[in-house]
Amino acid sequence: QVQLVESGGGLVQAGGSLRLSCAASGSIFSINDMAWYRQAPGKQRELVAAITSSGSTNYENSVKGRFTISRDNAKNTVYLQMNSLKPEDTAVYYCNAELTYYSGGYRLSTDYWGQGTQVTVSS
Image 1 (cartoon, one colour):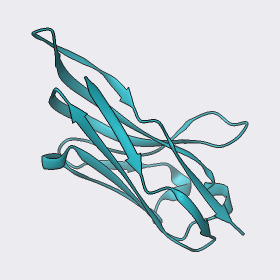
Image 2 (cartoon, rainbow, N blue to C red; image 1 turned 90 degrees about the vertical axis):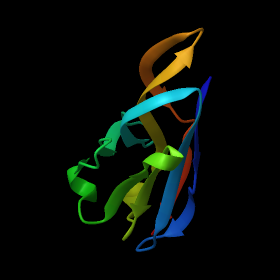
Image 3 (spheres, helix red, strand yellow; image 1 turned 60 degrees about the vertical axis):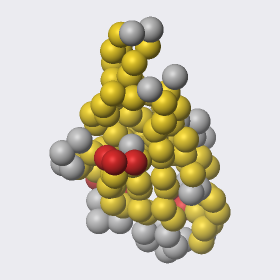
Image 4 (tube, rainbow, N blue to C red; image 1 turned 30 degrees about the vertical axis):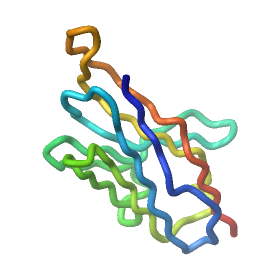
């Protein structure tokens, strides 16, 4: 029905940059908020950045000024540009989307999650 596919993770040195992408596909009617979360080993999953369908954004305090979330509504895709990366940014990053989709002739609304992409920042 619906898939969120992430890409762009990897290994980077401290101070470097990465750009994550998350594309939603399937029988989608509309997408509301989209967001990036992360989970480091032994820690709870936390919200990194979120963006509404109209483009309003909010960020976790530690990434303000370094990360930028954006979206392309025509492509059902959300991005996370990560600059000035720090070792403490190391985590699995997950895409999340609140969306409405078609199923069996109905419109259903729910949260969808991507599979996660590993970001490792070396010191």
